[in-house]
Image (tube, rainbow, N blue to C red):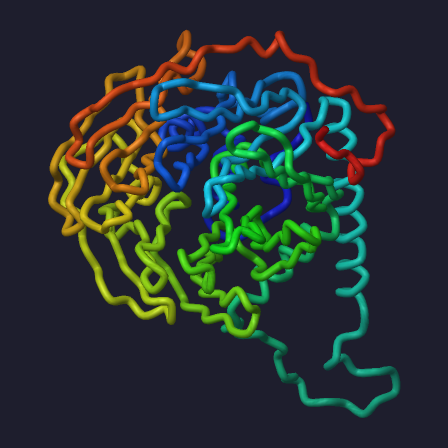
Length: 459
């Protein structure tokens, strides 16, 4: 398989994580620290989530037919049902509408090995054309070059330099433009279903550059409804966008955006960029950028309320909780004095804050810390060598925290074995098993070898 996952450069942690995904040993560590997000229904009676089997590090990433993605819903009574199962499309994390009647998620078609090779070839051809155009541009006469026959100029000519203080940076914009230019598009689908009957209500086509790494997309894409339920926001690097469910219109609000989160009132979105955090008004009238040098966990950005944003950051490899206002000002910096634990990447933790604001949970996979909002550790949960607790998700009433309980399978990969529920103080309440599935039991949708990559529907 020739898909080179880090070939197209994307600034910031996304580039670093994309490189990690191509390196088996380091990717194992990343996979042990995170998984696809989950979502409680507004009533708290149902928990929706996606799993993939096998969930393993591979240079090929996700290939049609090699894995099975399952969107599932776990009821309060412990009943588990499969809403959708696919081996030819990646399914993103789900989201409930504010009234609890609908469930949405993003479906991205997977490529066969032959299609992936063709995609690679198209990107390589595009990059060669881009580089040749750059070379021709550099060979043109400089602004300060002396034309033939002109009078002799001073030996020292003015230097053409750029001090890039822009936000987003000139480099970031150039890299995004390059990516959008050389990468073929794919027709993804934002699917909306009835949350009780699982009937498909609508499906909106979202044309995107094919993600350079689907594993990163699986781990980070988290759709969010607007308060009125009429639109969905989602971030698929490098784009943060709004999808209108009635008209199908797609609006891009921030570029580049590596991770994005919508405030509870739907008026503001926070996006992480290289060296900056942006606060974007969803009416498109104003964006405030703040320079940011500290590392921010891709799963460590949470709106506490409509006016305050919490970030899990790192300072000298020590985790720090920082709270920012929607204008970018820092109002709280809380160094977290955590007991010694296995994860040595302080900025790779997952952060969850209870809706009532009284508790929070930080997970590093092998080590989970149940804490008061003031930073006091109430319990330190430590896994054995073969297990992990990931994606802490508080119920709307703040009385339970759900996790994906991951276990090592045959020394080769981790799988979501069950959903585990804990009280905010760290005492375990219950577990619900997730049955295994064999990828060979499903068949991917076959596509002609010469099918354009921008017309696949993921059906």
